[in-house]
Amino acid sequence: MSRQLTDADQALRQRIAFDAAIDQLTRPVLAQDQAIVPSLLDQLADAVQPGSEHTGKTATGSRPPAAMDALALAADIGVEMRQALAVLGEHVPPAPVDQVRAWAAHAERWQHEAPDYLTYATDRAGYWVHAIRTLLDPPRRYPLRGHACPSCWETTVSVWSDSNDEAPLRRTALTIDVQRAEATCGACEATWPLDQWQQLAALLLQQQQHDTLSVGV
Ligand SMILES: [Zn+2]
Image (cartoon, rainbow, N blue to C red; front, top):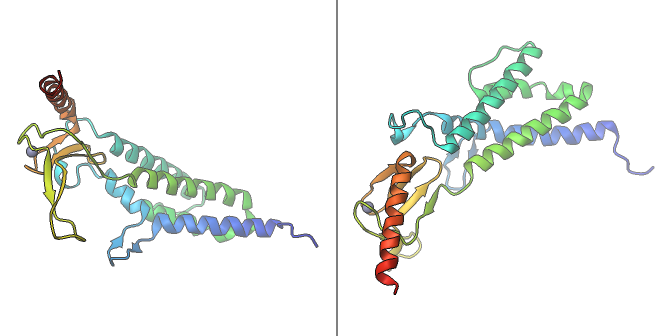
């Protein structure tokens, strides 16, 4: 008999993919350094918290773009979970991670009785994993090379690396944190919310033009 996938095989494959996605969405993992990495949904919930840590009450009205994306994605998942749980006659728990767990608890039945829905659910869960990872994974800080800090005028800062304690490394002083939407100087620790970024960018441009004028020609 040729090895054709039966409907039951297909459903089982979907189920494995579905469970893998749900695991990433809902289960914290133990990292190599023994730190507990929260589940993707908890990380997303964290990213949505307005001004967790030091951005506090600063932002008047405007959220940074990354937080907007996180907010939109979290809202999307929330709407879909509330609808799905209502259809299933389930109580809707407040935490997104519990909503997804309550929804995923029906996977066994979908596998045997509603494979089309399982396919759909696997697509959604896989998309959420991908979307959250894309949102949270990019490097948090980008160096802003070749620019002096507009506050302290440092261009670099010394950093001791873990692997080599012979000499400190020189790193660029200014970095941009995309997720927090702020620029930081590693030398004087000044930070600028990206609301003020336009202003900072103008300063930097000025500085660049000044440098070009004085260095060039
Ligand atoms: Zn500085």
